[in-house]
Length: 488
Image (cartoon, rainbow, N blue to C red; front, side):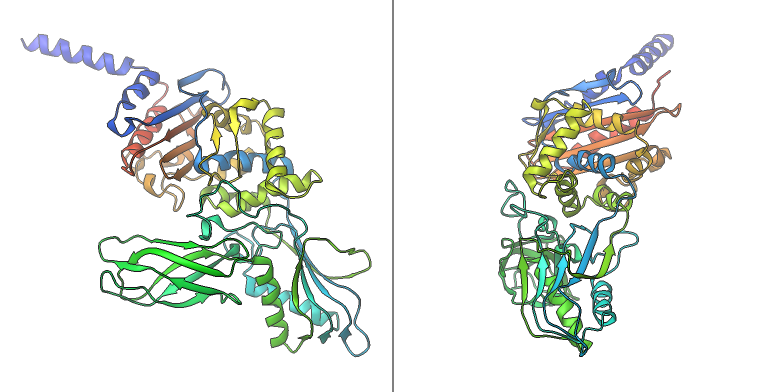
């Protein structure tokens, strides 16, 4: 009997070890969390991308959520190059007279720098520092008084500043901030609520940071003693200064803070410059205006040029922190680089051209509405993402692309996956871009097998009925299975 049991154990062990990755994935997908849902994915060694290790619905269009940023950042790196910088310029319409009076306008020319006034990216400077530099440039030009307007030039972009397919619930919140050629402070501001330790009480707004001119906030937010998460949503359209806030925030003893989309970033940038100029004794007699028609800058005096950090540093924030604004700004910049207006439509044309030119996707493989993945209507096949990941390994820019992806223990993008490889000491053998919107969980990136060979993988779950983290465990298990290749 003992020998019979030993025989059964050996057979079972051989059966498990002989199980293919395809069979393993198919078995894991039988979990109840996927009942009524749709799952697709694929994996392949990057040097042989057409020979897939496993494939499930790899040719089916699925919602990628933020995994779409893999396409946007790949196109940006290949188009601009890793050292590319965006520029914002300050012009005076003419030189001042002998009394220091500028009889004409000051112009802030938006160059579509997504990082202007942000401290997120290495090498970027805060908006307070930038307005001081602009003011110093005005002083260095000998200007003590401006008898004209301060004009924010937003002519580089056109069309909607938020992708039309983005949900109304998201618009008004920082993660759906409007794109602008003159973005500033990540196009967001913070709303501070006073301390409130009682459940079900109104949450009172105590301040905003920075202070937005002409802004009206109405809060319908209440406190929730059972939920420790931010469930407050700001409602308001771009360029709309009357915002309403609904939902709940946790009960608290020290106050609570949420972030909202800045209604008009270009106007705020110009207003901040005016305030700093006034503090330093430079008077502006005119108004703050924005223009969608570029003036002729040829005869004007260039006072200052501000350069963004390098693109290779910007995409780290796009992918590791999954920052939507930067991704959507890069999409528009693809159009600008091609000599077009920086609209969503033109940016999508350039992105699709990149995918077709490099044979990463056929026309029917993608239906894309933005550069960030925030729109639920975006559709991309898992194989399109897989081919893009493999393609980038052949690029001289691959190191920058790879390093922009998160490790499982990285803060931010993959918070929920951060510990799953710790026991296996394999954290550094994985780079992942995650994606989450309602009903969608995705993960795509690279895993290095036991022999040091690189595997690209894509895992996409759609139409999930709840937020059960079981889908994350399924994706983790598939990645761990890939790490064990080749199996003996």
